[in-house]
Image (cartoon, rainbow, N blue to C red; front, side, top):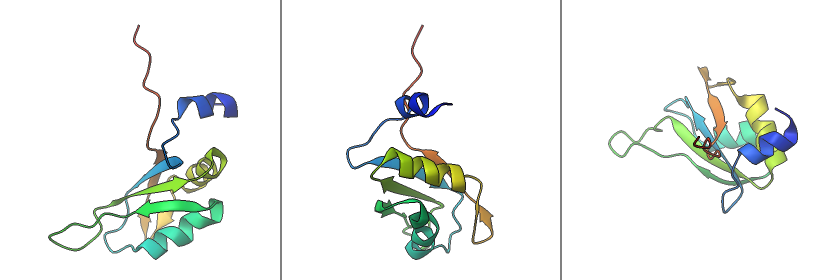
Length: 101
């Protein structure tokens, strides 16, 4: 996709561009996520939910970047990257739904 078309296919959230990261190791910490993702821009917020029963990470995280360029850069570089010996998947959390015909 070209940059303009790709930007129009994603939706800007209230706080910025949101990435949804899956496949996170249950013993990962917020610091592990920050260290990996901060190279691509300023992280506005990070949510790393824990399982109430076990206290371990549920396996996903949600990150906000201020700009589309930062979020796209992180997504392109880290999709299918290795974090604590696990392959993570990184995608935009909000996309424009397909038009009904």
